[in-house]
Image 1: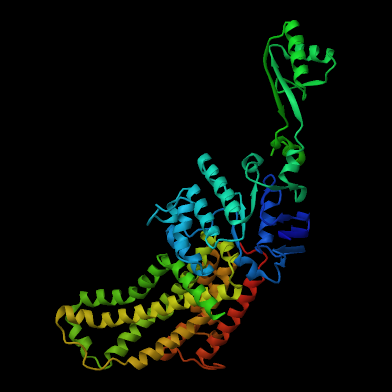
Image 2 (image 1 turned 135 degrees about the vertical axis):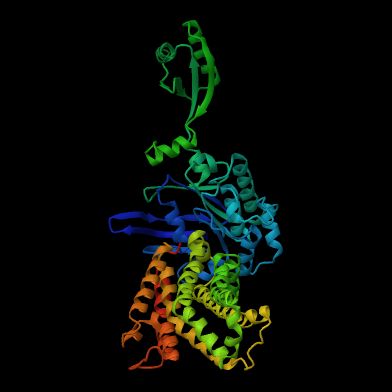
Length: 302
Length: 260
């Protein structure tokens, strides 16, 4: 059973504007699922549909094996979410904001202190949420989502507005929630680098179509290992290497070869030095995931 | 369901605490009484004569309610209804509210009940202010207060009437506020409807516009306007309009394509 399973989810805001096309999202229970795509790809629309914020047009949505249409209340009791910009009452303090949701979810009032501690807002006292920085508002929004200890957490670009330290803290928090409480987490982002050390599963969406979905390891397997050589004269080095019977290309002012075994690396190095080319660096590398992601969405300018 | 509703009302009440809506209750409820006190304090020599007037309290009540029924109450409803709903729009919080385990009719009802409670609060503040407007000038200048009893029963009945008269306005403004994200739209439409109602108050069929009811009730009671051809009492029609627009508002709210 999946925590979230959509079938044939299709949505359009106008007849000519199909924003989602046959989305079959599969978020395994206990996973941290990264939902990736450039801005405007359809991530937020999918999440809004999954949460019932948009009226379903085509397809079906099941959460914990229950139809969202028929079991909305029961499902929402087990889901925490933060979609797009933070949803907080600016004229109230962090504690007052949480008190509202504590009444709604009927959780112990001690949870307010716990989540404030977790997101690092315990010190805010009587300061109104409207005076918070964007990062603090984002944290409060996440505190709201965590308050009732949900089984499923849906976070739309939760690191927006957070500084690098905050992003690391957020990542650690989500990993801890998943590990210690078994919380299934669906987190959307437009940056693979931001979530690659967080997720166990990944879904890539672009222009309303799902391009990839599976375990993160499957995406990692798409990396192609290579050998990167930096020299004083890359054009001459290219000639030397290809004359030596190896395939190479010049990319970002470096020579890129297929992954080589150590003896071949030694041989190439010797050939280059004998040809009068100074070798600055020989390193092993590979397509980073960001590049694979960019290739997948077929547009490197987003 | 009742517990859900009570919980939802509690949260809605917490949300409006400290917002401009609370200040609006005080400002609106005390404005006319404060004005009356200031006017009487400027002419203390007239106080003794005023206090000796037979039916002092009824006279005071009538003076105070003229401004309230015709202007202050409709203004309050137009503003406070928008303010209560705008709390969600302004804070981007509809989406959080609509992803909480609360049925949509419960959320709808809770907000409406908060608006109605603020309306009752306004009447309480206004009545307390009216009492103070009656006694404060006399106490300050040592003038003997009116000897006659305060007609509490009459005042209570009239308060209830005005409250009922105002219900259709609440329902229409609530419907508009829920439909438009832009604060100016329900505000502008409400003001327009109110001005239209005031302009046609003397027309024999003015009762078809529910925004006239408070003023119509006041003028009919004061005898300024003779209201004929009413198909039912103003309060009955007010209840009818209220039920209709509340039901329409609920249906439109529940069938919205986007909920945040």
